[in-house]
Amino acid sequence: MTSSTTPVLRVDNVWKLFGEHPVLRGISLEVAAHEVVVLIGASGSGKSTLLKTINLLEPVNDGQIFLGDEDITDPQVKPDAVRAQVGVVFQHYNLFPHMSVLANVALALRQVHGQDKATAEARGLELLTRIGLGDKAGEYPDRLSGGQQQRVAIARAIASDPRLLLLDEITSALDPQLVGEVLDLVRELKKSGSTILMATHEMGFARRVADRVVFLKDGVIVEAGTPEQIFENPQNPATREFLARVLNPLG
Ligand SMILES: Nc1ncnc2c1ncn2[C@@H]1O[C@H](COP(=O)(O)OP(=O)(O)OP(=O)(O)O)[C@@H](O)[C@H]1O
Image (cartoon, rainbow, N blue to C red; front, side, top):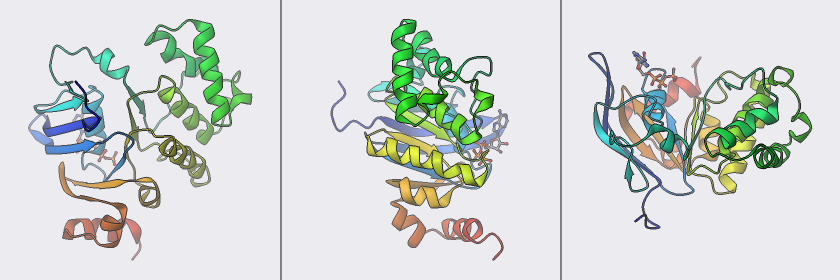
C-alpha cells in the first residue's frame, strides 16, 4: 500500500546505455508528493534521457523506477497504464495541428481515460479558462503564439490530474519574451500542489520554482540540494564550474 511518506517517484540506481555509451550511470532520485525537482546540467548530461526512462519511452539497462509502490520497469507493467498517471510536456509542444486547441486538451481524456466527448471538453474548457486561454478554445494551434501553445500543452498534460508531471526543457524553443508566461504557469501548478520533475536550462527559473535542484554531469548526479545550496554555495567543483559557465557565458 502507498503510505503518505512513499515518494511519488523513486529512481533507484538506473543505468541507460545507447550502444556501448552509458548515458545514465547509476541515477538514484526521489520526488516527494507536491515537490518540484529541477534537473540542471550541460547539454548531453542525460536530463532528457532520464525523463524518457520515467515515461517508459526508453527502457533502462539496469536499476528500477517506482511510481508510488509500483516498479514500472517490471516488464509486466503496461506503458499506457503508467503514462495515464504521468503528464509530459516536451520542448516542442507537439499539439495536433489539425485539431482545435480544445480538442487537443480533451483528446487524452477521451483516449486514455475513456471520457465521453462532452465531459472531456467541459474539463478541457475549464483548464483553458484557468490558464487564461478560454477564448482560444476553438482556434487551431498555429493561430497561437509559441508561449500560448506551450501553455496549452501543459493544460493537456494536467487535464487528467496526473500523479507526476515531467517537463522537458519546455521553454527552450520559445522567444525570450514568451518564456515568462510559461514559467508563471508552472509556478501556479506548484502552488496548487502538483508534483513536478523538470529539466531546464533556465537557471533563474530553477532558482525560483525548485524545492530541490539536481545537477547532472555525464549521466551522474554530482550534487543535489535546495536552490540556495546549489546556486549560492555549491560544494562540488564541477557544479561551480557549470554554474560559472551558464550564469556568465561571456565571463
Ligand atoms: N536515441 C538515442 N540514441 C543514441 N544516443 C542518444 C539517444 N538519445 C540521446 N542520446 C545521447 O545521450 C546523451 C544524453 O542526451 P540527453 O538528451 O539525455 O541530454 P540532455 O542533458 O537532455 O541534453 P540537452 O540539454 O541538450 O537536452 C547524449 O550524448 C545524446 O547524444
